Amino acid sequence: MKMSGSINGKERIAMPATAPAWQGAVECDGCAFRRFGLFADLHAEDLAQQPFPIDRLSLAAGDPLYQEGGRARSVFSIVGGVVKLEKISPSGGRRIVRLHRSGDAIGLEALLGLDYEHTATALRPMSVCRIPSVAIDELGHRSSRLVKQLMARWHQAVHQADLCLTLLSTGSARARVARLLLYLGGEGRGSVCDGLTREDMASLLSITVETASRVVAEFRRRGVITAMGSNRFLLATGALREIAEN
Amino acid sequence: MKMSGSINGKERIAMPATAPAWQGAVECDGCAFRRFGLFADLHAEDLAQQPFPIDRLSLAAGDPLYQEGGRARSVFSIVGGVVKLEKISPSGGRRIVRLHRSGDAIGLEALLGLDYEHTATALRPMSVCRIPSVAIDELGHRSSRLVKQLMARWHQAVHQADLCLTLLSTGSARARVARLLLYLGGEGRGSVCDGLTREDMASLLSITVETASRVVAEFRRRGVITAMGSNRFLLATGALREIAEN
DNA sequence: CGACCAGTTGACGTTATTCAAAGCTCGTGG
DNA sequence: CCACGAGCTTTGAATAACGTCAACTGGTCG
Picture 1 (cartoon, each protein chain N blue to C red):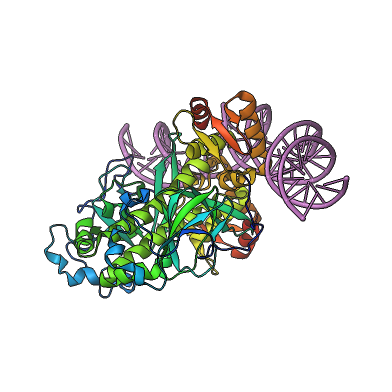
Picture 2: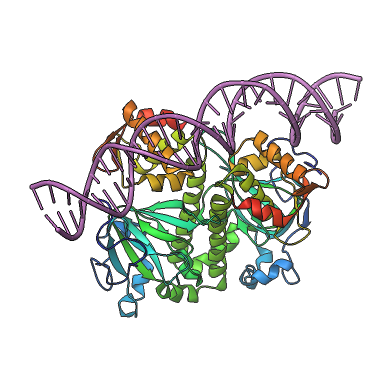
């Protein structure tokens, strides 16, 4: 029931060899996933003669689907099961940033020609459809640049969400505040952070207003930040970066 | 420097009346934001004669842009400044789930005909372009259903990210574990949660393996969950929901 | 059988929350 | 102009929550 077969560290990545239930074009009619309609248009294109056809993979619990930093060539559509998306946090540790389930698509960054931003791993035995990004590119081609621009914006939203989780919701209160200040002030010299109330900080960092205040006060005493008007601070980025690593 | 003018609670929502620098179609050539190219295609459509033209709004710190639950009719493209996105958490409190800055687009759910999922508020004096979703719908029309399906998937990713933040990264360790179990097991009777190691829990919830273990042990002693094989638990959803509220 | 890994448990230290009370700042109205 | 009050910030002391370190358990696999 635990990890199955050859999984132990980072050896096996899902490839056509990973025991796909079907090879080649998957029959989407009759598929429970069909109702979502993602592939309807794809099939109109007669995808079967593409170099990388759509196929379905069966994964055991613990099987990796793709890895952070790897070249993203496929989008995955989850037919059944649960996937965890992990990201290496600035502190070096791994952080699960979210879970995805049936009906979700993951690895969408493939459509933008980016690298995978997470390591995706099956949490249970599961089933996914792998859709090569070229298959969708073909369609995106006929539509305007706008479509790609829109997807880029969506991606940015997801990216910001991940940042908030890895940067601002982990580590000690001091580390979180430091990261927030750096994030808002920019990393350069003479960077200032402006406009944040203690309440905003608290709400962003999952801490209380009091601790936020205490940490800011401590930073000021230590000279790590310097007040310049109401809630406007000059940052000593070097020292802050130090603190940011928990 | 704090909140400006009439802002006090939830009175004013950015409407054409909110002191837009331009009325009507914005000149995107010569705009710093132009390089992102979002509007290039839109202008080819001769948008000026649309019922709701694109225009630019100037906001003061604290000004609301849109509110959670409101009908989403416009996407906003941030030209300068910082916006906070807040969400009402299950505990009733407000949680800032992320920040967005120049170049980001927010309120993308408008393209899917949904309600706004957050309350968006300016953190500093700022400038945004408001793009009525109908303007983009027009384009999405010419492309296939696939485009909308893709956007729906992107949206789902963002949604999951928000859930992880509001459900799994706030409140006491007990509340987080309870919410995670409910989230994975479903809310129905006889629901089971399966496949999570203590390490996964810890990584998801920003707690340590030991606390995760302790909380699970406590839940078992209390009869709130019942072990059914390795890392497989039957949930007493009623009691768990109780605990989930911090 | 022994090594290993995930889970458990305890004792202890640290950190953050809680509750309460001041201090500050700024706009309002006398 | 000054006093006043509202809202935000700061600070303190007591408490509860969580993390850390370390030992121990039970199952799995070679």
